[in-house]
Structures are given as C-alpha cells and as structure tokens.
Length: 190
Figure 1: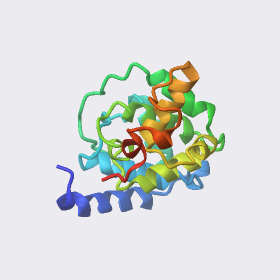
Figure 2: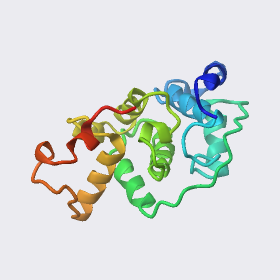
Figure 3: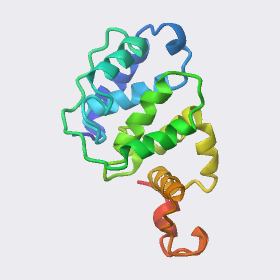
Figure 4: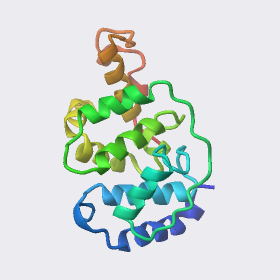
C-alpha cells in the first residue's frame, strides 16, 4: 500500500495540507511541515499509527483545525498497538520539550504511540526519511536530541533513555562501542 506508486498521492496530500492557511502560532511552528508529512504518510498507508495518531478524536480535531484548517484526512484505519510504557515515553519526551508550541505535547504522544511499531521509528511515524524524524526531535525536544550525539537509532535511543531513568541497563557491554549489537543500534537504516 505504501510504495513508489503512492508517492505522487503523498506529495499531493502534503502540498494540500501546507497550502491551508494556519493561523496564529501554528503558522510559525517549524513542526507544521513535519506534521503534514506524517499525516500524508499515514493517509497513504505508511506507518503504524491508528487513524487518530494516538491522540484521540478531540485532540486530532484540534491539531487539524489549528494547523490545517478544513483538512479532512482519511488516515489508514488500524488499531492502536499496545505499548505498556506509553506514559513513561510521553513523560521522557515532555520533560525535554522545547516549550515553544502546543504541538510539542501532541508530538510527544504521537512519537510515544509510534514506538509500539515494529519498524524504524521514522517509518512507524509515516515519514519519508530518518532526517525528518531527526528534525522533529531537534525542533521539539532539543535537549533530548542533543543527548543522541552518537546518532543512535531514535527508537533504541528513547528506550535507552527511558531504561536509564528506571535504572535498567540493557547494554551487555560497558560501552556501546564494544557491544556486539553496535551495528543494530548505530548502523544505516533502510
């Protein structure tokens, strides 16, 4: 469902979302284009998020009304995947939010919800590349993004941060550089 044949539709949906006149703070929010990319991806079947992005119908309605007025997004209907650590991941993200835009709270929920997926986090979010996810993290959670100085894959990085808060250390080696799983955490993504 999500492949090269869906790319023109994705570009069209993305352009349509950004053409909508957002007002107030939403117009100046650097996450607006990232949210548009995520929504376009989800509408084309990319990602793992439920149709409401994990926000619930009311908050998704608020997001669309403020950032993309008049948009009717028909995201792929799929159930929310269970994620026991959802609240802990949300808290981790919110504790590191930039504090500039209301979208940061929505994005924290969306990212935490997408952590339940089985692909790379950027794919689970419906982005076209890891660069979009890195930008999303830098804009919305800059202190947390700065901690990922080794460019660890984002989902692994978030779980590692969460686990270290809880006193859970899963790395089998004293440092990542000598761990046998180094390539799984830091290698190139497809």
